[in-house]
Amino acid sequence: MMEFDLIFDTHRRKTANGKVSTNLADTNSRISPWLSSLTYLLFGNILLPLYFSQITITGQENLPKSGPVILAPTHKARWDSLLLPYATGRCVTGRDLRFMVTSTECQGFQGWFVLRLGGFPVNSKRPSITTLRHTVELLKREEMLVIYPEGGIFRDGEVHPLKPGIARLALSAESSHPDLGVKIVPICFNYSHPYPSWGTDVSISIAPAIKVADYNNGCVKQDAKSLTDDLAYALQQLNYKYDDLASSAFMQIGS
Image (cartoon, rainbow, N blue to C red; front, top):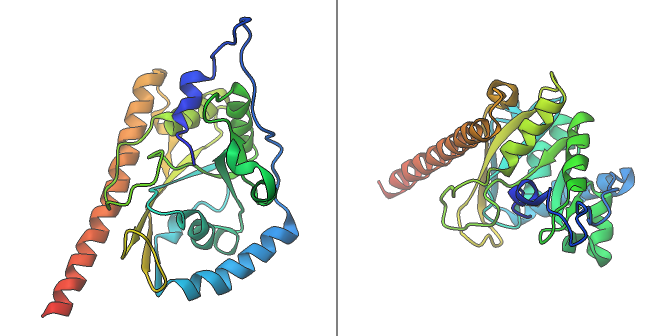
């Protein structure tokens, strides 16, 4: 997954001839009914329960069943993108997830799967306004998007500084389409090992949704900062709660 704020820093970037750059891998991603059903069956019922010793999910009642949603998870392992549909997708909310991925992940055989499972690409080296428009369009269609706000995988168990792009995107969609009702859902992953292997435990914590309209006060830069700060705080609280539970469990084992 890429650092989404690059889109907002460069979506007005111009080419040498003065025209706005719109180069982007094909954004015509879609959900293949048969492929997505097969994937949910194989991963949700077989692979994930067998691979992980215990999968603990809390806060699923905080997931909106309708309306435009951006899931904003911490990113601690590549398994996150497989566990997220298991914890929040079709079998829980009746909704499929739309992942933003780099354009290189949409090439070849892998790309064939990614595009048919709802992923949509962005050129991380030269993001374009086309991507922004496509993402806003998905929100207008009340889809559930996934954007990792930290911009990369971090295995140290901490919540790292968030990129402002997710807040800017949400505010852009909300301000251009009043009463759209975009919500951002903070989600925190924690694994019992930094590099999850067979038998690892995983915890997925979901916080109440943040209403983007509450931050739409007319000053984009300040509004985005406030929204980013509150999202970071929510993720940190989820992480602290996991640390407290893990410490308590360790003390009980040792007593």
